[in-house]
Structure formats: structure tokens, C-alpha cells
Length: 232
Image (tube, rainbow, N blue to C red; front, side, top):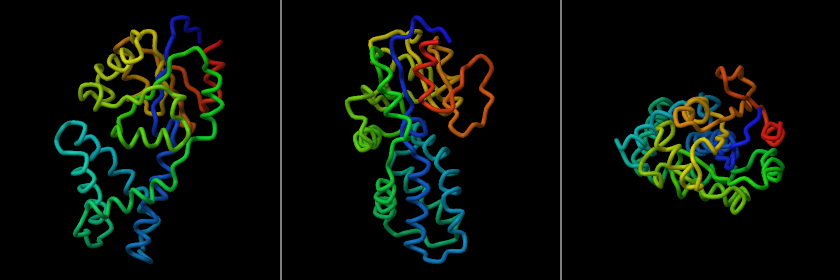
């Protein structure tokens, strides 16, 4: 891939730099096990929680509820699915899960090496999570100061991926035009095909080797391949 106009690179966070799925799976499994020891569906809790994540986050991003409300709703939905009592204080219950989740925060092992090979590019993180949470992740996994600003819908006028204004706003935050920016991420709609309408280029990070990529878009299975892709 020859991209002589690329001056900046935006990275998705969850699933790209940060192993969100492993941390969330471990956290919710420990939460259910702690509250309901011996639950017969404990081994299903992580998959149920993962399936609930997208719809409830979408409600928040659409302005239908606050971020705290979507957390309460999601936790209540998990309890309903598992046929267990809904906690009387959902905020405290969610905080218990969040603590367990944080204990498992980690970067993917290919991140540090990949970033070391990207000198000369303006870097940033473009994520659909909440700003305080995503900034805390970046700090905790040792990337503060290495990946540039953390950009979310909260700082981009309420525009979340895959809204075109999210990508144009993120490029502007790097001081660049969309065509000068490459977005790297694991979500096909949000990180690969979505940016294309603005002229921003993208690379699909297919960590699960689910391929093939959408026609016309490059695919890598590890961030270690990114410097070579840019230089080819």
C-alpha cells in the first residue's frame, strides 16, 4: 500500500490497543461468581454481557439516556437474563463490576513495538467510549504521551463513529484533513468503511482472523504489520 499523503494515524482503543474483551469477560464473570456463587450459567455470563454492550452504548450515544443510566439498564438486563435479583443499588453494583474490570486492563502485546515504529506521524485515539474511562485506560496501560489526544464523541460535538462528523472532527483535532489520516481499528463499520465517506483511509485490524476484509480495504492481523504496510 502506497500512501504518500498520510501524515497522521488514528487508532481505535477497545479491541485495537486495549484488550477490552478479555478484561470485560473476566470482570463480569468474577462479578456474577461473587454475587451468585455456583450459578448454573456462570460460563455464559461473559457472552451475555458482551451482547448487551452494543445496544445500550448505542442508546447513550444517541442521547436517549445518560451513560450512568445505560450502565444501570445493562446490568439489570444481565440479571434478568440470568434470572437473579436486580441489585437495589445498581450504581454501587456497577461500580463493583468496574473495579473487577479495571484489574484486568492491559494493552495488546503488539502495541508498544508498533508505536515505536511510527515516528514522524501525528497520532491520536478515536474511540466511542466515555472520555474519563478511555483516558484512564490509556494511562493505565502505559500509553499516555505516546498516542496523542484521546478523542471521543463527547469532545467531537456529540458525534460518534460511524458519523462522518466524528472522522472529520478527529482529523481536524490532529490539524489535518481527513485524506491525510489513516484510521486503524477492529470494527469494520466504525473503523474501516465508515471513514471512507470523508476521504479518510483505513486499515482493518483483524485480530481474530475473521477475514476477508471489505473489498478495497487493507487488512492486518497484528499491529506489528502496520509500519511495513505504511512503508510498502
